[in-house]
Image 1 (cartoon, rainbow, N blue to C red):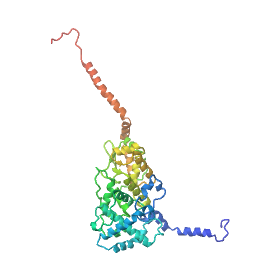
Image 2 (image 1 turned 135 degrees about the vertical axis):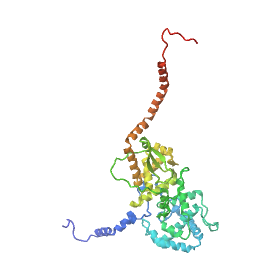
Image 3 (image 1 turned 180 degrees about the vertical axis):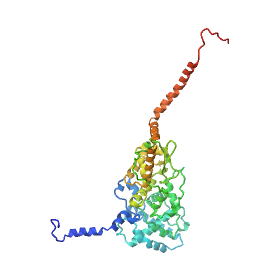
Image 4 (image 1 turned 135 degrees about the horizontal axis):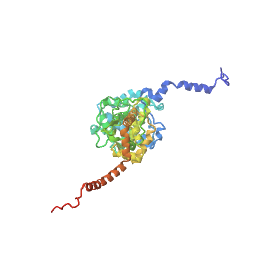
Length: 441
C-alpha cells in the first residue's frame, strides 16, 4: 500500500539521497572504520584531542612527516633541511639518486592506500616527492642517532642543536606524523640503516638506571611494522602473555588506588625490565605481589606513550591494546597524589612532573582508551587472589588499618612486662619464719 502523500512524481532531492545511500558501500565502510583488517595512518579524532595538553601530545613542533601536517606554515622551515638530508642519505651509498626516487615511486600507490583520510588534493607526483623527501629525512636522522652517518665528505645536513634533535625525536613518533614502512623499506634496500640501534636509543628514554637494559626478545626481528611508531611501540611493549582471559562470571575486586591494593595485602613491586607488558601477579606465603615496569615519565616519554596508545585505539579490533592496558592499569592505581607517591616509593614511576600532574595525565587519557586483554588478565588475577585468600586478606586488612594501635598496645605491653616480672619475683620470694635464728655473717 502506497503511503499517503506520495504523488508518484520524481523527487530530485530523494534521488540525491538514494545516490548517496548507494555510494556508501561496505568496502568504503571497511576502509574508513576497520581499515580492511590493516592499520591506517589517521588523524586523531576530536574526542581524543579533548584531553589535557592534547596540542603538545599530538601536534608536530618542528617537522611535518607525511601529508597530515604538510600545510602547517609553522613547520615549513624544515623543508630545505629535508632536501639536504635526502641528498646526504642517497649520496652516502653506491647507488644513484635516481634509483632511490624510482624505488619510492614504485611503492607510492601502496603508500597512498595506507592513509585513512582524503588525499585527492595531492597529486601523484607531489605525493611521491613527499614520500621521498620525508622518508630520506627520517632514515638519515635515524643514522645520525645510531652514530652511523658515514664519511664526513658526504655530510650535507647542517649541525643540529641538542634542542632540535629532541624536538625532531618527538615529532617523528607522533601518530599523525608517520609514513608507511613500505616507503622506508624501499629506501633501505639501497642504503642500510641500523634500525635496531635507533630503536634502542629511542626506548632508552623510558629506562631507569637500575633496570635491566632492553634485550631483543624472541621474534622481535620478525615483526613487520606499519610505520616507525608501530615498531618502537612493539619493542617497548615486549612480548605480551598469551594467557586467555576466563570469561566466566565472578566477583571483581573493587580497587581504586595503590593504597587500597596495599590494604588487602598485595605488594607493589618493580619488574626487572621497563617493557610495558612486563606486568604480572604472584602469590607469596603471606602476601600477593603485583609486578609493574619501572618507567621514566618525562615530557618526551609521556608524549610517545600517548601516541602509542592512540595508534592502538585507531586500529579497531586488530590489536591487543598492550600499551593501552598499561595506561589503564596505572590509572586504576592512581586516585590521589598519595597513590603516585606510593608508586614512586616502590620505584615504579619516575615522573619529572609533580604527583598531581602525573595523576592528571593518566586520568585524562585513560577515559578514551580501550581495555586490552592484559588489563583484563591482571584484574582477573587480582580478583582471584582476593577471592581465594579471604582469611589472609581479612587478617592483613585488620593489621594494616590498625597497625598504629597494635604498635601502641605492643609498646605498652613492652613497658609493663618488666614491672610485672618484678612484682612476680617479689611474690615468689618467701619471708623467714618468726623466731628463726639469724645466720651469722
